[in-house]
Length: 599
Image (cartoon, rainbow, N blue to C red; front, top):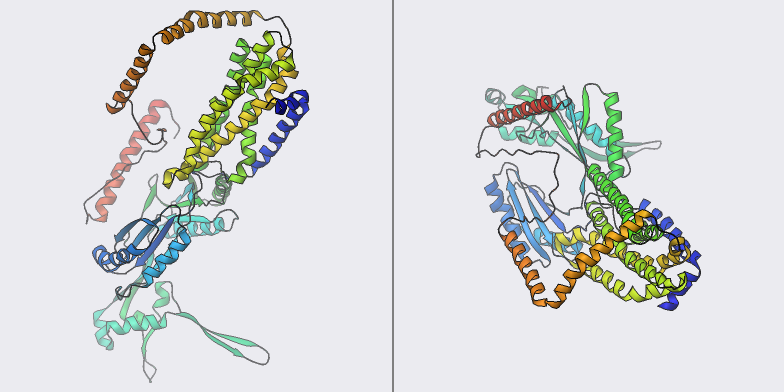
C-alpha cells in the first residue's frame, strides 16, 4: 500500500489530473441522466381487459373473471392475481414473480385465455397486454365558461399537440363520459311502416360502415372503391335507409326514431374552482425525462393561455417541483456541510487541512455521477434522498486521515513522510469502517419486490459515493496536504488557541473521566446500553416513537372522500359535492382574510 501511495504524494499533479477528470466526466454523466419521479423499474404487470355490454358486475364475475382466474392457476411465474368487475367491463391484473421473464409469462397468459371457449356470446374481444411502467410527471386542468363538448374538443386538440412532441408519449384525459348516439324508436311508427326492432338494428349495422371494396384498374388510372357511410353524429344516422320499395318509396331511420347526441350515463365529472373542467395527465416512461416533460408542458400551457380567451389551462400538480425541492435540500445541505467541515476542522486542526477534507464532498459526488449512466441511474426522489443522506458520512474518512497526518507532522516528521506514515497508520481502520457501511447498504441491491425496485438507486448512490470517497481520501487527500501550506509552521490565531483550550477541556474534564469509568466498570456500561435499548423498544411499542415506512412530508393538498350507499341518485351526489366545495371555499376565504392571502 505504501508503494501505491508514494507516487501520488511524490507527483501531486497526478491527483489534480484525477480530480479534473472526475469533475469533467461527472458533469457529462450528470447531463446524460434522465429525471423521473420514482426509480424506473421493469414492468412485471400483465393486464387483461374484457367488455360485455349490458352485463352486471355479477354476470361478468361469473361468466368471464372466474373462468380466466381458474385457467391461470396452472401458469408458472405468477405472484398474484387481482380482478375488478363492474358494469359492462372487467379488468384482471397479474403480477409476475421477480426473476421470471414477463414476456414469456405474457405469452403463457394469452394461451391460457385463448383456451377458454365458454365465454358469453355478447362479449367483445379480450385484450391481454403487458403494462408499460410509467410515473407521474404533471397534471393540468382545461377549464372555462363553455360547455363540456367544447372543453373536450380543446382537450383532444391539446392531447394531439403534446403527443406530437418527441419525448412525450403518455397523455390521458379525464373528466368527461363517453359520447353516444341515442336512438329512441317510436312504436306507432314501427307499426305504421310494418317494421320490427330487430330489422332496425340489422339495418343500422349493415348501413353504418366504412370499408374498402377493392380497386378498378384502367389503362390510365386506378379507381379505389370505398363505402364511407359511417355516421358519428345523430344527424348523419337519421338519413340511413331502413327499407325501400320498387316504386321508389324509402323509409329512413329518422322517420321511425328520434336521434340525439348525448353523453353516456357514466357520471365522470371534474370541477375546478366550481367550473366544469377536463383533466390532462402527462406521465413519463423509463426512457423519458420528467424535467423535459414538465418544462415543455408549462411552455405549451403558457402559449395556449395567451392564444385562447374562453378556455384556460391551469397547472394542477407538478412532479418536477417535488424533485426541485429535493435538489434544493441537497444543495443546501452540501453547502452547509462544507462550511461546517471547514469551520470546525479549521478550529481544531488547520484551516488548509479542513479545506482539502471538505473538497472531498464534490469530488465523491462527481465520481458517482461519472459511473451513474452505466448503472442506469435517474435523478429521482430515492437517489436524491441517498445523496442527502450520504453528505454527513463522506468526510469521516478524510477527517481521520487528515488528523493522523497532522499528528505525525506535529511529532517532527517532514510533510511527505508525515503524509505517508499518517495515512498508512489509519488506512486499515478507515477501509474497514467504510466497507462496513458499504456492505450494509449493498444488501438493498438484492431485495425483491416493490421495496427492492425503489431502494436499489439508494444503495447504488451510497455505495458508489463512499467508495469514490475512500479512494480520494487514501490517495489524493494526502498528496494535497503534503504539498500545501497545511503542514507549514505558523503562529496560531487567538481564535484557534481559544478553540484548542475548549477542546482540551472537553477532552480532559468530560470525555476522559467517562471513558475511564466505562473501562473500569464494564458491567455498568453494558447495563446502560441494555436499559436504553429496552426503553427504546418500549417507546416504540407504546406509541411514543412513531413508525412509518416512508418519512412524513407535509403535503400541499387536502383530499376529501365521499362514500354513499349503492344506488344513490347522481343528483344527490352532485348536491353533496357542491355543498362540500362551497364550505371549502368559505374556509379558504376566511384564511385569506385572516392571513392576508391573495385572491
